[in-house]
Amino acid sequence: MSGLTDDKLRALLGKRAKAELVEWIVTQAAGNEDLRRALLGFIAPQADAKMLAAELGKTISRAWGRTRTSREPWKVARPIAADLEPVLAALEQLIEHGGAAAAEPVLRRLVEGADAGFAHVDDSYGYLGPVCQEAVVLWGKAWAKIEPRDPKTLARLVFAGVRDNDYGIRDQMIRDFAPALGRAGLLALKDMFVAEDAANRANEAREEWERRRPLRHLADVADALGDVDLYIDVQRQCGAVDIYALPIARRLLDAGRAATALEFLDRADGSRKHFQGEVEDYAALRSRILHALGRDDEARDTLWQEFGRGLNATALARLMTLTPGEKQPALVADALALAEGHPNKLAAALFLVERGQTSRAATIIDAHPDQFDGRCYGTVLPLAETLQREFPASAWTLYRNLLLSILAEKRSQAYHHAADYLALANGLAIRAGLREQQEELLALLRQEHGRKYAFWRLVGD
Image (cartoon, rainbow, N blue to C red):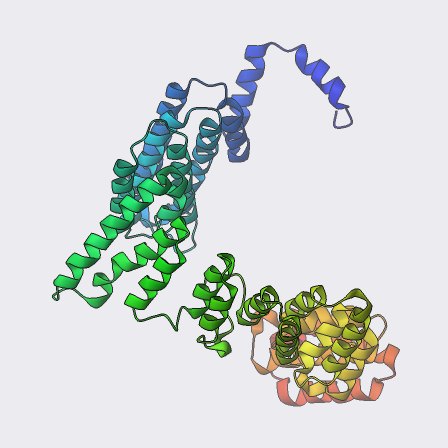
């Protein structure tokens, strides 16, 4: 039956009664959440919006009801998330097919249910939080399609939402609701936070972090409005302009103010390299600003220095885009040469292998065998696997380091890996003419790890 063409399968299904097929599908969906999610998305466009919304609301109530009926409610994060995911899929379809007004109160119910539900749930593994955050995203999409809507009323909803956010699910609510708020709603929201900030300044009894909370929300409003100067002013009021110099510079560059962006970036701590939430690191942003200012030589130099520090492949790729085609081969040659002399031998070997230079990587391993720490198995093991066919001596060194690391640290759960590495090392030693070194390795194992009986049993097996 699995060899049937789609046309033949359609013909055979067409011979079955519609009611019979519906019943069969419902039966299959009862134990298959993926199918149930797909079915909800399939029926949403044609379903009666109010009826579907009512049914989805019941599912939401049952999902959050688990926190009241379960004997161990703190363990129900995953099943609640599984209940809610198909609801979100159906609501998204409903919104896209003209049912935003029906979907909005259902999404409100889901998000407000989270406020009470999270108090009884342990979501340490992050099953439920992302689902509820996605609900906030859809809630904003629903409001953006509802006409007419009062921007000021919606601004009050968002204002209350971000202030009552104990579990972090509304962290991005201002961003998510920005299209629905429009400029008028965002300006109304700005006024609310400005007023709250003024009230907080007058209340010295409040904790400093609490007094500054409206400013954090004002920064989100500034981003939604595209108002870089407001964003800078917020950070200035927080005394954090130098700390936030990189994100300020990125916003200024995106606004077409490259010269000012460079002034702010020069205030940043370049040694930090990264800033949480920013896609570009310090060097990448600096090179982009310099390029925007027509200072391409400086932009390339910035990226070359960044590449040289840690063999940053991303920096090299960006540098290639700023280098004329006829000069790119020479740039690649210089990069390979720099890698060969780099003090981080593991990073150098990985960089060379990734560019097909396995022979040069093997040379580094052979010259610096002790620089490849077996504890870095996430990188050393793939390197060994890549080299073992053409460069058995180099691969032998890596497998030796891997198994010695496991035994030295007494990682008993990894002893079966150590036994495998020993077997691989034995085969590689034969191919590479390293029998004497293999015997020395075995002698070392017996001397220093002879009483690790669990390991030796695996070797014997």
